[in-house]
Length: 268
Ligand code: DGL
Image (spheres, rainbow, N blue to C red):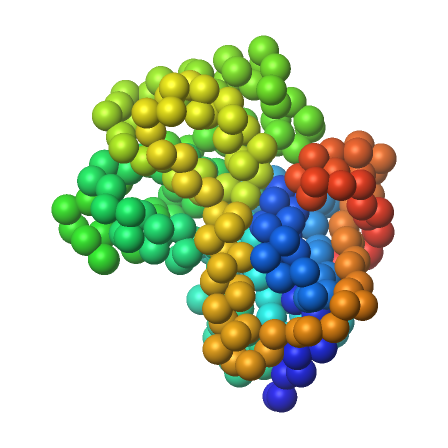
């Protein structure tokens, strides 16, 4: 299939956390049109089986393909871990894919870190995707991972920058597994919202890496390589969710940096 630069970029996540990635993409590529899909009806993905996550991801990508997307960004670490290979196989040659794991792994490898911590959903941690990919590049990098399943729902509910989030974050980051790390990977696209609190916990002594700007750079590089960068100014943005509530719409602006209109879309 021939892609046209005019076609939109599709972006999806289990919920509205992937808007942190969408926000980085629109800043890096202001001429691109975006179609976002948040699978709020199935949130959180982190507690689901790999098969369920694959099934949801396939269905969402079919929808994004119907919208003529030239590229699909899997703006969810959990879906990237469970479904990226399946999606590549299933849609082979039909659309470009970018996942959020590989760019973050690359920043660890390029950053020269020796002892990194990974926090993510249960499904991402159980897949050991970060550990395996980082070790593939360099066996000597120590990778310590812990599942932090309360964080995504807590953030999605708007609980951050307060006492509740501070105590949840403190108790997770005090885990012995994360002692003496030189970098912490925020391996969930919801977590950039608590980056300031995590920085505060470490007092600036640990580098905190997330998958926003690095993913936007990968998107840029791939579109440039494929000669698919758009140059028009008349960009369109659509934000679909599989389950709409006013509270999702209110929280969405914290992830995207401005108020957006969420549209309910039933694809199941
Ligand atoms: N934002 C998703 C991620 O990056 C996870 C949230 C969830 O559990 O649904 O892994």
